[in-house]
Image (cartoon, rainbow, N blue to C red; front, side):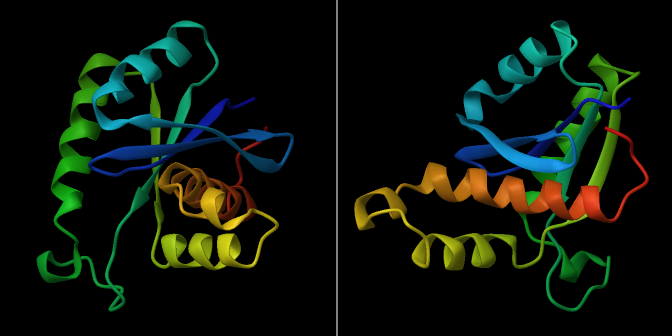
Length: 143
């Protein structure tokens, strides 16, 4: 049984989500500088064994240099660090095209008031939820 943590990676804030049964829920939004400590906490407490990380591709759907966003270099560096520190950790990638736009659309059409909708940390969590739900719907992982 996999214990999954999904990451919507950003250079300032990172949205995290977890599955409960087969539904994704927002966990928290962490500051970029606290991401490693947060992941350490979840791994050490045996809450996760699998990370799902968004793969920022441009619309063209090509995996060439010109179809990648600059943040992908930071994500690769982060993944390589994790693979060294936690060799048993399973790391999966998922296409995250349009996840922020869909999350923003959800916020605009949600029950949140205008002040709450403008909080970027809510947007990051919703993006992580969308990524994880997509992963769960299209994967053979058992939860």
